[in-house]
Amino acid sequence: MIVRRIFYYWQFIAIGALPVWLLVGSSIFGAGGWEVLGVTIGAIALGIALLAVALLVYARAEVRETRAVSWPDVGVLGLWHALVVGVVFYAAEAPGVWLLAVLAGIAAFWFAVWELFDAARRRVRQVIEFIDSTSGPLVVTETTILGTTDPGPTRPVDPTVIIIPEKPTNS
Image 1: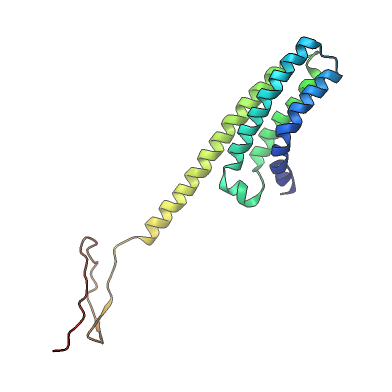
Image 2: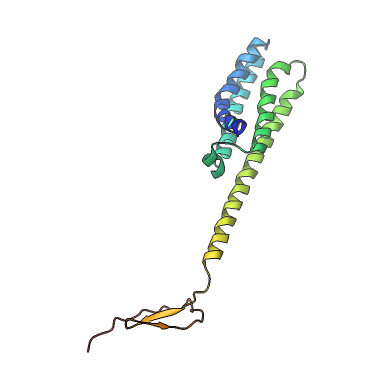
């Protein structure tokens, strides 16, 4: 649970930390002028993508209630964030790391969308089951007529018929 909570808070910190890491790290590890411009544009796009994924994860009710992401979220987000960190170290030697980081970001986005729809589907199913279990034909077991208890009909009451009891008048 601790790891899941750490990732819950880390996903919001990462919105600012990972793009800054790309900018600072690429400058430190020898990126040229034009490369820094490309990294700046990439860092802005990364920040927007991280924000979108974090909001999709946060939109799930169980994530907000427990303040912890699920284990699959930990795996997907951990892989994506590790690839973003690794881009700075291996961009010159292995340019394919950029592609892997982009593909992991796309996969993280669609995974978060799928998890959100799955959570919504489960909650709607719970509501429908609750409605089905609480709604049904009403059975009248006893009625009160003029202050006396009289066993009434035990047949189901027609839900389209509304019965309004009248107040007895003293004549």
